[in-house]
Each structure stands twice: as structure tokens, then as C-alpha cells.
Length: 440
Image (cartoon, rainbow, N blue to C red; front, side):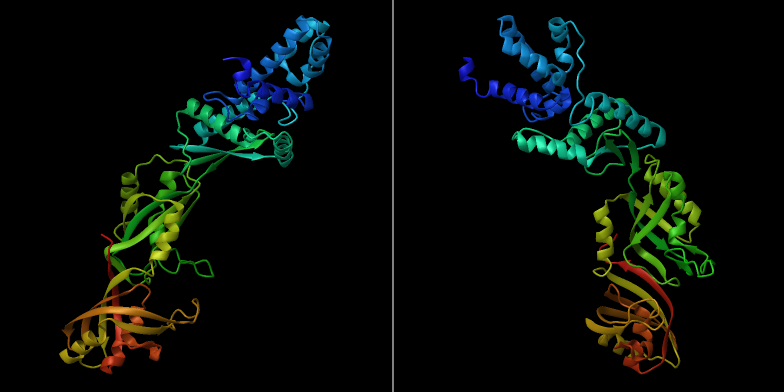
């Protein structure tokens, strides 16, 4: 195959020559303009190869006595840099003074080496993580200069300086620390600022999926602090998870749950799904089993948890959306102002078979929730008489139903209600959540 038959090979060198005549470029920045060509090479190697080819071609012409080639070389040499140093000194008897790269302002290879060392140090000394990812913040002036080059010279095989820095720093940090890069869900983010070289370590939140049970009453889901700074209730599910902060070296803990039960309602049976978020954790290596044991020992059976595995950010949105779709089963202990008959209980079971209930926001929570009317489905009610004026009811219903108000009617704001159906004054003395359908 002759040179004429080899497609475009001379065109690449001509293009590189054209770029270098326009402005000085370091090896990386020149090679990056052809980043999509070739496999297994760094941009530094591409740029170095192109510069050497240009120097060799000009040197060949100079040896043949071409004065125009000599002039072209002497003009171009400061923009080429180290590849031209020896020939320049031979031709002029003086030392070459390379010009700084017009894009990165210096030597991008040295920049990458320096920030890689700092990034690896941060990973080793500041945290214990299983994976990382590199992000690049490029100063607008550099980004604009690079984009101008690409557009002006129609460089269709180029990549950005940010892409090169992320890839090269990532490879070096991984080789240095043994910690792998994770593009989907990294434990840590190393933010590299170009051209300052500042490296910031950002620890990504740790999200753990689990289920909690609340065997005790007067336990809130989150810590309830009054306006005077006093805890309203002695313990909470959120406080039960506090050992996770110490175990994972976090700064803040946030509980995301699929709905919430009242503070005096126990959470039994299949438990309530949740995701706990640990902000800025410095340690990701503690096994979940150890974390679960610590939490349960600390909570002393006021709260019990099972930690199922790690979650992702989208799971938080999903678990909050799920609360209205869950079918729940409640156990209500109902007290009546007068004796209740077997016929009364049969009437309740019959009336609340696949029955839509309209509820205005309960009076007890209207001060802190929007005053609206909602419709919820009651699928079934099973009752059991315990004493002449006390019965137990298992209520299978759509998520979001106010069960206490289903029992007493809330002064007519919930219709129909147990009290309305049997025409007796009723009171929900105890309430437990016993199942989330589909959760096991």
C-alpha cells in the first residue's frame, strides 16, 4: 500500500501542524483533539507522536536544504515544546523556551499526576470506602478556549479536558489505592478543579433499606422536640437508629418511611418499610449485620429493626410514594358507652365490605395538616366481642385511612363510621398496625 492509498494519514499531521501554528499546546491538549482515534493510547502519547512526526518531517526537509522548512520549524518549535528542543539547539545554538499551553496553561500531564496524588491521599486518610468517582470542574475560560478550538478547526475526534482528567485521575487513584471506580453509585466523589488543582472529597450518603417494628406505645417515628426544646416523647424510631451515625462515621441521620403511625400506635406484624440515610459517612465498611445488632441492642425492644441492604436515591422516592398504595391491616380495641350486641358487630362487618369512606382531616391533626376531604377504601372488617362493652376489630383498608376516626366518626367528619352504623358512642382505646400486604 502506497502513501497515496492510505486514507487521511497525512491529513492528521497537517491538522496537528495547523493547530500548533495557531497556538502552543501541551502533549495532552494536542492529543485530546484526536482522542477518538487509536486504541490503548493516552492523549499524551497521541500528542507526543504527532509532535515527533512533525519535527521529523521538518528535519527531513531541512536536511535537503529547504530554508522554508527551517524557518517554519524555528517558528513552530516554541509551540511544540520538548520534542523540538534538541534540533532547535542544534540549529540555533541556544536553548528553546517553550510557550505555555493555550488551553491548560501549563503541562496537563504534571497536573494530572499532582491531583491524582492528592486525591489518593484523601481517600486513604479521610475515609474508608468501597468505591469512588472523579468529577471535573473546569474554569469557564478554559472550557471556552477548548470549544473554540474544536469548532474553529472542525475537530470531530476530540474530547473535553474534563473527560480526560476524570479518566486519567480515576485510573491512577484506583491503581494507587486499590479502590475501584464506580460510575453508577460511588461511595465517594473526588471533585477536581481545573486549573487550580484543588481536590475536594465529597462523601455520598449511605442509604440502607430496612423494616422496623414498634412493640411499645408512646414511641414516635421521629424525635419530637417542642417549641421550648423539650422532648415530647421519651423515644423514637429515629433515635433507635442513632448507633448508625457512630458506626458509619456520619454527620446526620434522616429516616424515610413508607408513611407513619401515631405515637400511641404499635407497629407489629410485617413491620413498616423504611430507608435510613446517613449523611457524609466516613466509614462504609461496617457489615449490615453488625449495624443491625447494635441498633436492636440500643433500642432495648422499644423498637426493632431488620436491615435488608443498601438502597439508591430513587428508592427513597418510591418508598414515599408507596405509602398510599399499601393495603394495611389494623387491630383496633374499641370501647362502647353502652353494651354491644352480636348483631351490632355483624352490621359493622356487612357495612364495611369494600366500602368507600369519606374523611375530613381529623380534628386532632387539623392544626398541622391541610384541611381536606379524602376518600379511602375499607376492604373488610372482622370483629370479636371481648366484653359486653368492648370488642376487637381487624380492619383491612387502603393506606392513608384514619382508623381512629373510622371507629368514632370524629363528630360526623368521617362517614360512614362504626359509631354511625350501630348508633352508639364508640372510642378507639388501642390501635396496632399488624400488616402491610405484600411485605414479608
